[in-house]
Image (tube, rainbow, N blue to C red):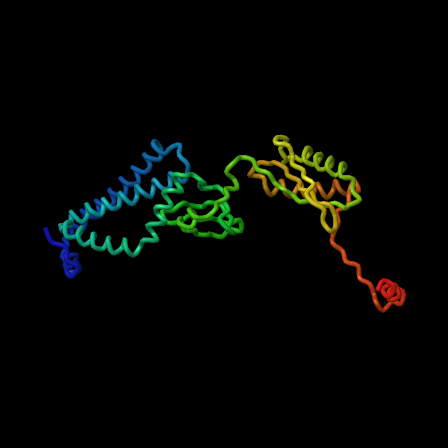
Amino acid sequence: MQSFDLGTIKDFFGHLSYEQVLKVAIILLVGIGVIRLFRLILFRTVFKRTNPQNRMLAGKIVNYTGFVLLLIIILSQLGINLTALLGAAGILGIAFGVASQKSLGNIISGVFMVTEKSFEIGDAIKVGDKTGIVHSVELLSVKLRTFDNLLIRIPNETLISTDITNITRFPIRRMDIDVSVGYEADLELVVNTLKRIAAENTYCLDEPAPFILINNFADSGINLRFGVWFDKTRYVETRNSVMKQILEEFRAADITIPYPHVTISNLSDPAVGSQAHKKS
């Protein structure tokens, strides 16, 4: 068998026979077919009921392992000395490992995240100031698709050391809406109106019960927090319908929603000036 020499690669491939090329082509086609068939069998048996995230990672492992074995078989058929090749690969591997410590950290962090199961493909998560739907989980990073259809790549090492909020982990969630009413408003009427809105709205759930909190006294009015429970897939419909219903019901009940206003006095007016002089 020939020893592996980088200087003679061009000459080596130039002297390949037609039979060798044909044999390599057949091995390559059959090998790719076997890898795909093996993946298909695994997905329909072992990984049939696993989540898309684990299926994706398992598929990548099968692909990488299969193609490495296929490459070794092809090199062996070409008569290349694999001992020398593996020795060179080992030296390159050490150099590559030293240069890619960051990537290794991302891979290890990715393994921890998969075992922790903080999120899965299709979940909506918030990482720092970034929010989106988990598009894919890779060996080095997680890719998010934002709600305005942008793709964000976040390294696994960043994710493992950052607080992650899984917005859609549970089937239902609560939507909090801050409402302000005037100081002259009847608070009992306001609370009963909000309860009726939650009961009549088709998107709001009866259980758990709506959350109503008289929050604080602001400059322009009294602030309340109105929380309703809904199906996590109906966020937009729920928010739009509840906001619209609050406005309509408050108008019908003559409940004033205050807004900031400023009073401007004209100091050149003699009446205003005399009042200001008396106060001073």
